Image (tube, rainbow, N blue to C red):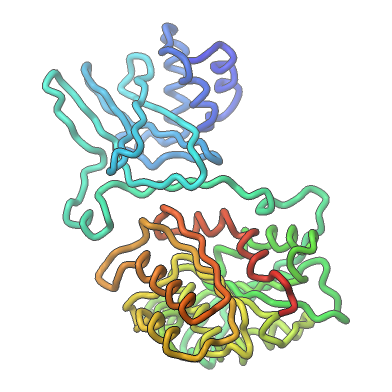
Length: 404
């Protein structure tokens, strides 16, 4: 274990990944009580039941911690990436069967991993949890995905800064998408004024981004980096007949229906409470996965109404014809829309297509057709983690030179 100071730090409160890294920085402890105390805190951090199965890491900014229970006398445990790009030997905590480790990584690190347990003189090797080899082939590897990013300072609410107001609208019934209900939310920045219509940005799958986008809007508006912008966060519809989510039909279909839903139903309701600009340069739309292709479709179908698109790991694949966008972009006269694409090399690769290659192909088509576009490529998986980490810079690029 590390120094006496590290031990005292981890005893002072709930264990964190950073405190675990500090506690394990030195040689293993000679004091059984200290080892037992650390083991108890590791159990509290991960959960007693989870440790037998091989739990997911606990993450604190750029520090990640792993732990697993692997009883036996001659046992060695490490966290191992599928491609051997990462290996972290875990430390046995005293005489217990509990192994733990923590390390600080570079922002943007991504890999697939498992716990590798080696036991006995013959070095018998097993992986925890057991791996479904058939499923592994379909997801670019057999390990579990891991990616980590630093939190952008402008993603945090600033002390003393102006903050807007988030209001919820429940169980909305659509006419464009009949027999559905959905929740949606509106965030009105503190700078909004009745005599100065605001810009607007719509976010698909609104339940998630409503919790982290407002702080970014507040910070960028206060700095003057983007115009005063109202955030509209819309969930996909839920079918009345108990058929579940209407998400794929709404998001993946290549038509003007979702644009009509926003322009004819949602935005007029927002406009009853806050003055909004009506020009395309003042409207942006964003989404992840199927929400990403939906955002592109809205602008593609109605470039007169939406001029800016932010897509994270967009589903430009053959779900409902999204793979047709790349050739369409090449063959259709350029439309006045600005596009920001984010994706990672470890995105999905399934029967409907390869997300990473589909996004590269769309970017190539946008370049060929002379669009104003930008990309942010990484090593990540099908998640919002990378997009969230770069959201302030993405919005700054999207709104640069406004109006225009």
